[in-house]
Length: 210
Image 1 (cartoon, rainbow, N blue to C red):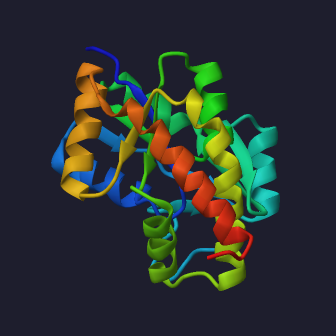
Image 2 (spheres, rainbow, N blue to C red):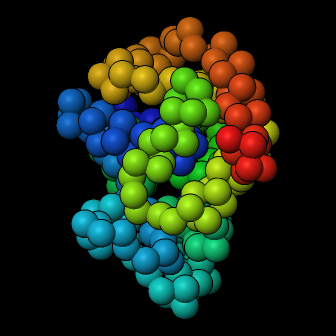
């Protein structure tokens, strides 16, 4: 049996990473969505073991010490990490494992697994990104600004990703990602210019100009 591919999916807050990956798993049967561990508290409607394995800070640090994580990083004051056992099991079964992690973790994964495919999901512009995050209604204005400030910083590392995909129409985004993973062909790397424009828009937002 051919071993599956490890696919790291990152993107700006509000770009629709989670929605895109769930749609990909629902449409195709050769994908597995890795469930990350986190020390942040659950949002309304989230369940332990489904969206994340929710841990206390102390529990998460114990996992780090025990070597139970493929990677981990801190983001907006909380730990996020990828449990090792599930990933290795699914790859051995020939399934493509999708990891939703931020840029620090993605680069660590690439260092440990050179064959991993790194995909960055973005909206078409900064205004769309800000609107989606605001419409979600799960965070206050201060937290949104903090996330946008961090996103502007993260844009500096997007060049390390193998592919950049614009999530404008969900079905099109899902189909594009499937083709990337299965054929390695994609014409969207030119979207780096979109990232640069979004970066400028995010900086204006966090500086109070929008």
